[in-house]
Amino acid sequence: MYADYFRLKENPFHLTPDPRYLFLSRQHQEALNCLIYGIQEKKGFMMITGDIGLGKTTICRSLLEALDPSVETALIFNTAISDTDLLETILGEFGIPAPGENRNKKVYFDILNDFLLQNFAAGKTAVLLIDEAQNLSHGVLEQIRMLSNLETEKEKLIQIILIGQPELTANLMLPALRQLNERITVRYHLKPFSPAEVKEYIHHRIRIAGGPGDIRFTYGAYQLIYHFTEGIPRRINALCDRTLLVAYTKNISRIDRQIVKKAVGDIGLDYFQKTMGSGKKLWARLTI
Image (tube, rainbow, N blue to C red; front, side, top):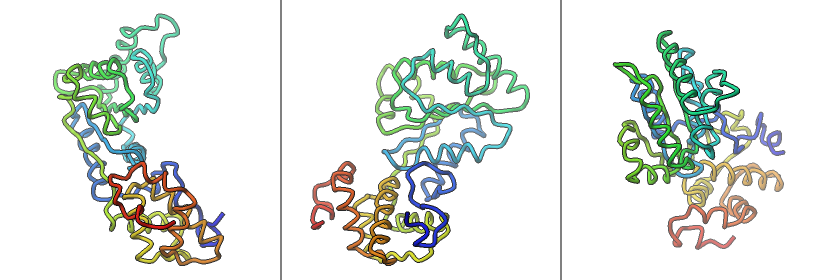
């Protein structure tokens, strides 16, 4: 609605993960580098964790785009599955025909092992990425550990990346999952943006959308955006999207503190309270 008004090609703050808009902050670049390193060095298990809305899925998509054709990938988003479903899904993602009958784990394991051996012989690497891994049951996590047993005398046949919220780390600390936890040697935990990174992030997305156009944010506006969102990218997108809409309806292009406060009021403080760590944050002292 407001893109034409601000002379942008598209909405810069949509919530759908889009690798074109990936903002490589220092830590996001480090997380991506960790994954690429783990794949190249065939470390077997890698893990990226972080709270909701920090860009984990976007990093995952960007990794897929960065890998060369010699890497075969399987990406799993639906983690509310059984251990047998997991194996069947992996086969499907790798493009391996699964038997219509005799649906059992041993058959699937044998088929997957044959594929991985052929893949290895062809000089290729196989990577399995599992998003929202904090939702995996203990049984499925144990099945994933068993996948790491598919190996040659020198290296793993499949590289496995677990991506999830901090609960994933807590799950892996349980005694029953100790063996899996000890195999994950490449780890990275994402944190929210700093105030400076929030400003850079906003500039980055507007630039990708064809800006800056007629948009101008004041220093005070950046401050409020950081305090209300606490540097969470998804929250920044939601607030900036509403902020530009408010500015559009008021027929102005300079975004100041009052415009941000109006946008916060439109969205509702409850939206931001979900990520607040203290009742003494700046938003609690503001009148919306």
